[in-house]
Image (tube, rainbow, N blue to C red):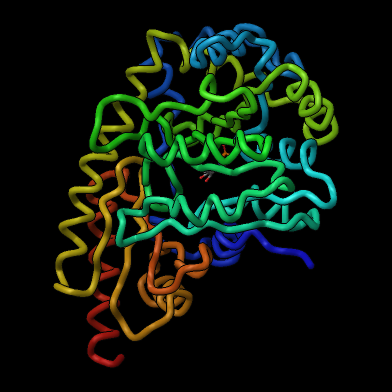
Length: 375
Ligand SMILES: Cc1ncc(COP(=O)(O)O)c(C=O)c1O
């Protein structure tokens, strides 16, 4: 049985005809000029870039900048991919075999567990508890991990809740992986988007020897259009992923690599992270205010990181109907909770220009008024 990628399916089917798109999960993207200015690059310099195939596994200069973000890693531990999406794809296709199991959390970004299910692999789900600020249920985790578990999939900080694993949760995950010999596949695309703290979410690399770390330019850096991501892993696994990468895409793009190399340099990276955090912090304050217009309808566990919130609502309407009505009646799109397997929620992004976000919130509140008055 094929399991569709629910968030992406919802967006591709319904997002075309909207005026306010608050369904994305990254910070408001940068223009090329903005990036060049932050990076101190002359636009003319780009004219000399040869638009040839780059090194298939990523240019050495880019892999060096990526490796520098992971203690003890070298460029040989890095494979550059077309976004974290391709990284998720090559990791699942290289690691998973019939009879394996995968452990994933709920709610989460569905791509990797979805890939696993589509390969016929059993996916065991562990809940994150809203009443407990979206903490993972560690006793359920212990019960779900077995000798068959090929990897534990972690999105940290989490999409859609923005939850950052604390020390206790991290050590429970490592302890369970160690006990069963499982890999930890850590999708860390939201590291750097911290809202409540200034230190970056620590990655899993270096804390356990079977870690595969995935990241990309799309979320914390506001550069999804570069279509550039990466995997960091032990060399043997990098080789296995590289062989799959050759089949899928050959390589990421030359321009993407040139620009990502600059963006990830020690001088430029902190400036980009600062821009993202500014948008995230102001955006969430606006969101919180907008959600207070109809008291008692919305509640949200403030995300510790990420550019989005997973909002709970108390209205007599299911999340898919709410999402579809918002599109057709108010030309505004959010992601229904049902796409994450959770009713009476929606995911909304708020790291957006203030006027844009506020108008989207006004339209959401208009729909709430309609629903409350029985329309
Ligand atoms: C947790 C997570 N991982 C991976 C991706 C894919 O990102 P990209 O392919 O743009 O790097 C996304 C995009 O929404 C995401 O939220």
